[in-house]
Length: 128
Image (cartoon, rainbow, N blue to C red; front, side, top):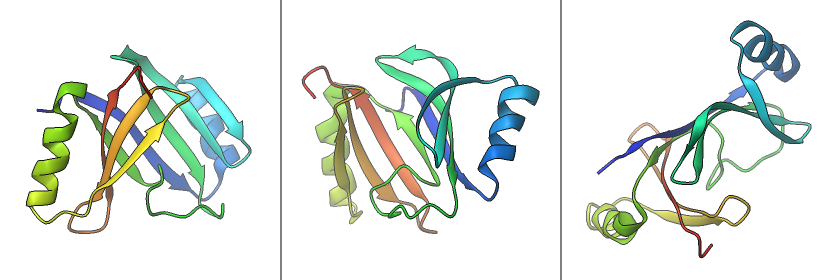
């Protein structure tokens, strides 16, 4: 059912220091830095339109956690299974929050694990 790991996103206390560490020490390439309070690093080439990403977010940034990309990880799924995943999660009593990302042509399902960590199932959808 899962085809790969799409991304891992963490909130950090010192974004500048962490950005420098992952860029200069770990050797990750900055993929995108659209706002001053987060940075996306490219881990690997795109898989079905979804680049494998490691993201850092400033913990002090005023970003609503629910339905966001903070402190979460994303699993890649096939577009053809999107509806089945949503239906299965709903039948299991899981609160599911669909979201689209038109910039990347992604369609996602967000939900929480038992300890409140955000999990995402994401797939490439050219129609988004």
